[in-house]
Length: 105
Length: 205
Image (cartoon, rainbow over all chains, first blue to last red; front, side):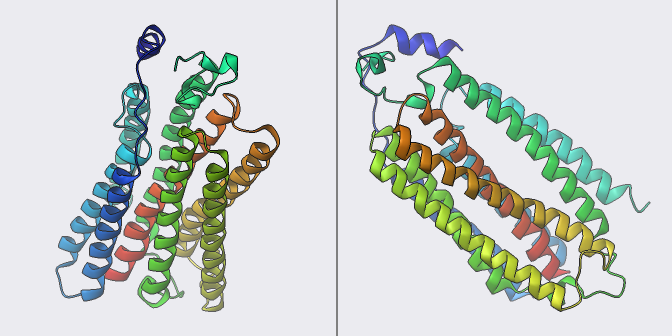
C-alpha cells in the first residue's frame, strides 16, 4: 500500500498521539442519537412512517460516526476497507428491498 | 521513531501497522467485516419479511420492554468506547492501561450477555419460543446471532488479555488487539440496527 512507503521514507516524522476528546464527543453523539430514537418511540403520538424514517436516520448517523472515528475509517489507507463495507451494504440493500417489497407480492 | 525501531527493542508508534503481516491482517479483517455485513443483512431482511407473522404468539408490542433494551444499548455503547481507550493505550505503549481497558470491555460484554439471557428466558416464559411463529424464529436467529458474536468477542478478548500478560505488547500481538477492537465496534454497530429495527420499530408496530 502506498502510504507505507511514505512512513518508511520519512523516519523523522513525529507521530501525534491522539487524545480521547474526539472519541468522547463521538460517544456523546451516539448517546444523544440513541436517546432521540427511544424518545420518539416512547412519546408514541407520531405518524408511523415518520418514526420509521427518523429511526433509520438516527441509526445510520450514529453508525457513520462510530465507523469514521472509532474504527478509524476517516484515517488514510482505508480505501479497501471502505470498498469492502460498501459492497456488503450494497448486497444488504438489495436483500432488504427484496424482503420488503417482493416476498408478500 | 522509524517503522523499524522495534528492532532495537522499541515499539513503533502504530505497532499494528508496523509489519506487513499486521497490515494484511487489518485489511483482511475489513474484508471479513464486509462479509459479516452481508450475513447480518440477510438475517435482517428475513426478520423484516416475517415480523408480522406472529400466529398465536405474543406481539412485539407485548414482548419488548424498552428500559431493558436501553440499558443493554448503554452497556454495549460504553464497552465500544472502552475498547477505543484500550487501542489508545496501546498507541501510548502502555500495556497496563491497555489490559485494564480490555478487562472493562470484557466485563461490560458479560453484562450485556447476562441481560440478553434474562431477556430470552423471560420471552420464552411469555410463550415466545424459538418455534412459536415465523416472527419468533427470525427474531431469535437475528438477535441470537448478534449475542453469539458478543459471546465470541468476550472469549476472544479474554484470550488476548492472557496473551498480553504472557508475551507483552509487541508488533505480533498489537495487530491482534487492533483487529479485536474493530470486531467489537462492528458488534456494537450491528446492535444499533437491532435496537432501531427490531425493538423500536417493533414497539411502534
